[in-house]
Length: 493
Ligand SMILES: *Cc1c(COP(=O)(O)O)cnc(C)c1O
Image 1 (cartoon, rainbow, N blue to C red):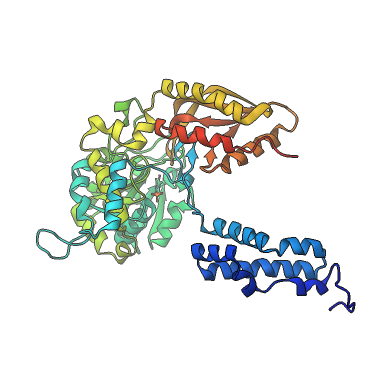
Image 2: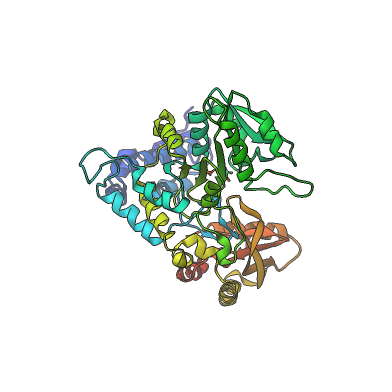
């Protein structure tokens, strides 16, 4: 409804005439500058949305004539449009500081790649590469061949294939070898990994029938042996990566299950292989660096596993990938399955994986070259010295509303690897100065840290925010300090 007054109204739909047209505003110099930067289409659409918003406010009678004059001025419109486009064009996937104390943090992208791998990715993305091209013959190649030899040497397996991630490796293996057949798994190993990966669900999707044996806490060799029938496709062991069963427990070792599988194979129509989902699957014995022992892929193959599946971006320290290594005939069968094509890796992955695997050929230098291992093995004294340097700077940036001190703490490896083992670390502990409203002050601090140009992710525990410095390497320290000036605390009332 329009105003019946002939006077210029001070509020309401009568003000609509004061709204400038899209075309008129677009022709103004500040908007033309924005169009040169973002393109006319983006600026037009954004400006139209801003003007639509103003029109709705006018119709609702929410703006006075003076307010509308300000909001609809060229300067204000250009500012609003610039602000919206800046936000729209800013990257969503951003670098953060992972000071959570979990080194392989799945939600923060797991393993960090060493520089060699990064350079290889850049090269491979900006120039054509022999991804599936045999340079010796000029004929068609197989992308798995790029890493096959390395994986065979590092694991002792006969053959290898690489796909998108380890969940896909399990799915593909089960579908290729066990569709419409039975797979025997201990009840103690029916794991759920974060992000909805559950062994029974994957089994169903792969078309295999799960045969559970044993109980949650105890499974015996005879449980496996007695469950084998002519419909059995394979025996499976799943590394219980993210939990530990303790107390009155019994599980059957890989070598014992392998023995049972192979003994049954002779009298079985297709044989009964043992497949081990190792989860994190390290390629080297971590106890060499004083870290807790985790079964290696090599040990698992040596124990008699016919196939082993593991992740590329957990302990291995490479890109997201799923690796399957083992018997040549079984790998050949897996590679013929159409799901292999659907789940294959791209050249980015292979470009990054190959140099990471090559680092393992020289284990003497692995702890300095492989980023994740370097982080796991950082001496606590180094983090303590860092904490002492940063403590007064952070205290100054936070002001009197918070108290910062240095504190020993424990990091976790993460991604389900070695859940009950922790690494002694050091860092900063931030507590609200006032007990009253401390919960709110902590929440505010966490969000202020997340709003920094490079967001800082810590961990709240025991009424404090903990910043574990294990993953703040020396080369990043200056960036961390520089952005403290942007910290928006204490909360504004
Ligand atoms: C992590 C894990 C998986 C899934 O691996 P992704 O690489 O994350 O897909 C599967 N099985 C086990 C035992 C794991 O620990």
